[in-house]
View 1: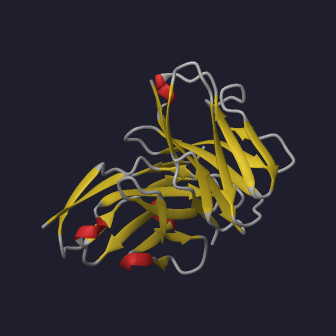
View 2: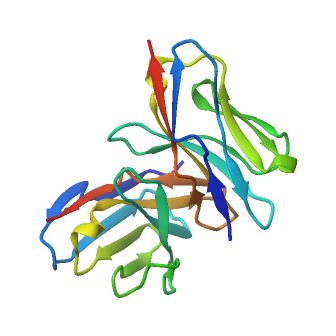
Length: 113
Length: 112
């Protein structure tokens, strides 16, 4: 199984600022994913991040708002840019272990004030 | 496009009673199906998964789920619930090397 560490675990940010969330995995993985869980809601896939290529964004999410880096097979970052209160959510990193099981980090709880 | 429907937003069950959480999916190909549990303030924990083979799959914590292709369903069951099972349960569908599509979740309440 894969162990995922996300930083920060929570943050309170001013509107208009940006926050970068880090995701570190204890093993090399090809596929990494970023999800958003808005308050009281389910998880929505933001984008897929593969090492060595541009991230692939789902409908409703754009690179300018959620830039993603994937510099190697164990690390990725998601930036939430120009934040507004509507961006207040839990952001989760996920990896596929040998393409059969999805593991999730504990999430980053973001509050925008 | 794929979708997952969990028709029950809230379910209340007495401790010791049986449980069934419903999940219906729409997917163009053979799906990979998952059930996750999320306790308050906790991350997501995988209960069980189905890729192929035996349509009745066993998971952790005494949970099982049955894949029924004809009904596009993957319902989660437990014969006897414990107070610690109170949580949010998510059904998800995906494919190999793909992100997951989640249902809206079912909030399980356990009555003493």
